[in-house]
Amino acid sequence: MITLTGNSLTLEDMKRVLFNRETVIAAPESMDAVKKSREAVEKIVAQQKIVYGINTGFGKFSDVRIGEAHVRDLQLNLIRSHACGVGEPFPETVCKAMLLLRANALLKGFSGVRPLVIEMLMELLNREIIPVVPSQGSLGASGDLAPLSHLALVLIGEGEVIYKGQRMISLDALKKEGMVPITLEAKEGLALINGTQAMTALGGIAYLEAEQIAYLSEWIAAMTMEGLNGIMDAFAEEIHLARGYSQQIKTAERIRNYLFDSKLTTVQGELRVQDAYSLRCIPQVHGASWQALDFIKDKLEIEINAATDNPLIFDGGKKVISGGNFHGQPIAFAMDFMKIAVSELANISERRIERLVNPQLNNLPPFLSPEPGLQSGAMIMQYVAAALVSENKTLAHPASVDSIPSSANQEDHVSMGTIAARHAYQIIQNTQKVLSIELICAMQAVEFLGVEKMASKTRELFEKGRKIVPSIKKDRMFSKDIERMSEELKVLHPFD
Image 1 (cartoon, helix red, strand yellow):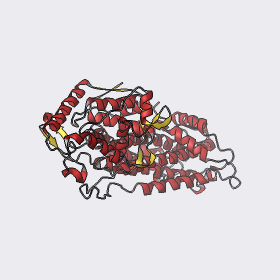
Image 2 (image 1 turned 180 degrees about the horizontal axis):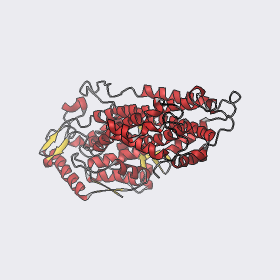
Image 3 (image 1 turned 90 degrees about the horizontal axis):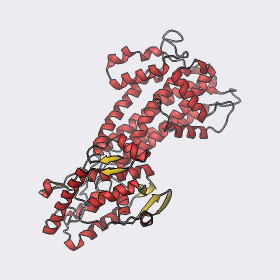
Image 4 (image 1 turned 120 degrees about the horizontal axis):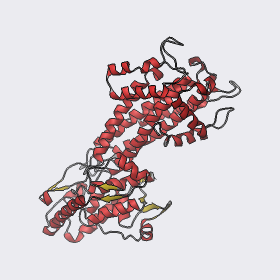
């Protein structure tokens, strides 16, 4: 069980909730802060003070005063009008993460919602009543308004959910669990939707997958080193200490550990003096991607514990300040950085694939074919990898440098962070497939050279891989092999 405080959630905690089905509870001290914040909102309403989002309109309508009799209507209308997302729904894990992150943010006690709202979010999460949230329509400021509105609909018994594998009307799922929809009070609708939880939820899941494939990319690259009789001198510790990047040093160390007992690798001068960059520079390139991933993780773990709605309530209601914490620029930059970092893992992998299949660059059968000429072998797999890395290059164009004004120019600069997160996630899926192709080709190469000569650690990967994709004895439809391997890469781990 994970205790939410609003301040201490980690990506590892998030992983446990999303993939291990751990339940969540709220820390009592955090709920106490929530209650005090709510009392401040109720006092504002009773005293008829003019405060944005409590008794005013939203965006360009911020100067329109709303009477006390219509405060509830204001919140309901907000959710309904803003729930206009389009496109395919986010994956269920992303929508679960949105519930988790929104509950955690509200527990900071700056948002003025009743404890009931947070309890409802946690109940939905724990009972796996998952909002159906369209993936397109967010500008990333003022937060993820459209996606989070679809999430908020579920609390009031509207919209749709996935419940026990079935898509259904939210109210039906709530009834099946004996739950009652809530009526949103002053500020609660705004507090639910004015945040960065869609981009951050998707970004967090993307990071977890990117971390997984970054480790796997090194294990796979180590097998490719064997398939190409790679030179180990380039991974010597002295070289990497001389430059000083810790991520580069660790990558080189992991490659050495994977290959320490291999009889297929060589030393400089044995077969050739130097390897091509896609082999020789694995620590430098993969290490640089790790630098980016470390930066991204830091930003995500700040954001998943951030108060990102507006206005925020301080000092028991003495200060109610309108600001811009909903602006997704920090996550937009992080997601764009992730796009570049993961794209590079695919780029260098595709170059290693080319070296595995090109007879002018190796001592292997052309295209790893069992009967060159009669059978094409892995020829078109390299085409697929090339197509995927080229697609990644277009997706890697930064979303964060784009902006477009909204709400009659009141909201005149936006982050496009959710678009950046969506593209980052797609790049990760593409990269998994490129790495799958490299692994399929590397396995075929070491079979030609002698599996018995492999390092014990890469032999372990080979044996796992062969349970998923059999050896190429004759041409077949390889798309299923690539898809199967790509799915398995999500759960394979070199340190298990």
